[in-house]
Amino acid sequence: MKKRLTLTFPKRTIHMPITYRLAKDFNVAANIFRAQVAPDQVGKLLVELSGDIDQLDEAIEWLQANNIGVSLVNREIIIDQDVCVHCGLCTGVCPTEALQLDPQTHKLTFGRSRCIMCEQCIPSCPVQAISTNL
Ligand code: SF4
Ligand code: SF4
Image (cartoon, rainbow, N blue to C red; front, side, top):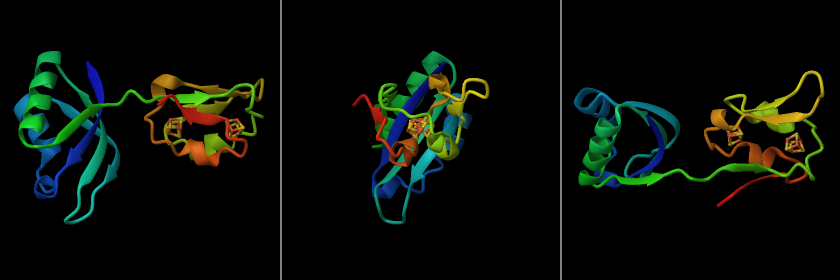
């Protein structure tokens, strides 16, 4: 199973080899979508963890026991179809090709399962057709 999470690291845990420990100790793979980490500052990672459900839960407990904040990502991208003019500008910034123009209809399509919530598409839209549910 997979869980998409935001991890928040206090200053002193920023150098922990998180992905290595998750893989070695829990057999959990971490796919990092976005990282905001700077020396001597709080760090944030947007990650997708994959593994056995029990081991995933154990891994999350281990993260929390090490003072790493864990929150489930429930935010979703919303495309307002009444506002979208299908210009395709958002497709150019989408790193996962969740946003694409249909080659036949030239209309915007959104593959929600491919979206990693990087939110790069939001400021790219000239008519503010893209927002989030939260
Ligand atoms: S949030 Fe990121 S991944 Fe999702 S549709 Fe927008 S640009 Fe693509
Ligand atoms: S940038 Fe905005 S208007 Fe253009 S295709 Fe994307 S959502 Fe539609």
